[in-house]
Amino acid sequence: MNEISGPMYYNGVYHEFYQYNPDGAFDPNDSLMNMVWGHSVSTDLINWIGLEPAIKPDIPSDICGCWTGSATILFGVQPVIIYTGLIDRKANQVQNIALPKNRSDPYLREWAKVGSNPVIQHVIPGLNSSHFRDPTTGWIGPDGLWRIAVGAEVNGIGTALLYKSEDFMSWTRIERPLYSNNALNMWECLDFFAVVPGSNNGLDMSSEIPSGAKHVLKVSINSCDMYIVGVYDLKRDEFVPDTVQDDNRLWTRIDYGTFYASKSFFDSKHGRRVIWAWSNETDSYSDDIAKGWAGIHSIPRTIWLDGDGKQLIQWPVEEIESLRINEINHQGLELKKGDLFEIKGIDTLQADVEIDFEPTSIDDAETFDPSWLFDPRKQCREADASVHGGIGPFGLVILASDNMEEHTAVHFRVYKSEQKYIILMCSDLRRSSLRPGLYTPAYGGFFEFDLENEKRISLRTLIDRSAVESFGSGGRICITARVYPVALVDDDGAHMYAFNNGSTTVRVPQLRAWSMKRAQVNVMKGGSVI
Ligand code: DQQ
Image (cartoon, rainbow, N blue to C red; front, side, top):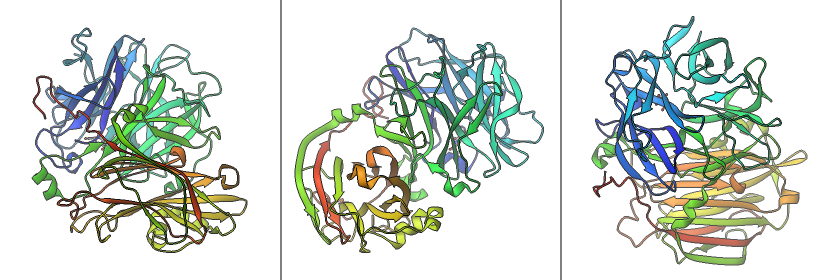
């Protein structure tokens, strides 16, 4: 499977549709296949029931595949799916609509495509019609008209095309796009949503958006999910970024690891916005064929905008805490340069760890070089966990074998840049496995931090065997990684340590960790597991 398509909460049930390749465990993006919309349901975002696919290719306007799209709930009662159909083997793309056959079925198992499909054709001057896909969730304007955006490449430029409709069925393109930027040439899986700076209450795009709200445009391209914060100019129906860098390497990321094609939705049960994404395998094609599956979805996260109006914050939904057991707790630890403190007493292969680091002095921060911003991964490779620093590296070493020949390091390093502090967070997979043929980069990203006032740098890492999801500084920076250690397979488990390799001593005022119970994953109704 690959990404989540059309997540929604409707009548007490969460729906997760997703791109599913019924032909086997290979990457559907590598060729044109008969992608269908897989379908799972849940009442808590953690335990899932697998259902039959909701949409399959069977009409001329999706005959070569049902690709990504979104769900919109019209006026709180009518769910609608809008999705991309492949009309031929050249991957020419149009947009289609499907409606639930029976709205009183709590799981909305069956969907019917409308007779007027395709509702949006690929006839636009300058459009590359094989790059015209992934319609967003709809939003409503003060004029009562619905809008959606569709990602496209127009005259070689990445564009969010804007469409309007009175009834969500018949669509007219507005000549001016919602946004376009020549830093990239095609945008997949656009996501467009409103946020109130400093508030973690989500906003429903189908309702009036309060004044003072900002808008976020998320684009997915080249395995990266990037976002821009700005305002939505209602008069011009245009997204206006607060700032935007010409060089897309400087665009802020939703997550700096293996986390792609994310999609958010408004969760009316809890009044929050939830986002999650596809985390592809980073083992080999033959590994995936042997396993018989490939691709997972990250743990859903609540997402909101920081009070500074610039930075999105993400935090695992609180429901994940229902899986916590066997808490261990340490307080008042101190890590001097070279210290390695073993965290014992939990299942280190399936764990949730929360740890705070407090440098005892801020004097020894090394000088920041702005050119590093172009390539944080290079900095994570060159200044890795074994390289002594001023403040840091400190963090966690997880999934470590007895002799450390396999381990994954998740860590921070603090730099001083004129009047502010900049922190590098890394998730270094280069020694994560002895197996050949894996993709094992050192992922990394930078963020600004008010070290003088905030003092503590927090790290939360959720480990679920091959999945390692890390949240730095309360969710200001996130890195998802996939790891495949082999030495641990026959062992009792793996070791986990907190470490410091910087000359500044680091206090650990609080360290809490839990083993995690197994969630119910895609159990089909009737008992058989898919
Ligand atoms: N995957 C889908 C496309 C989308 C891409 C096809 C992103 O709709 O653009 O499975 O991973």
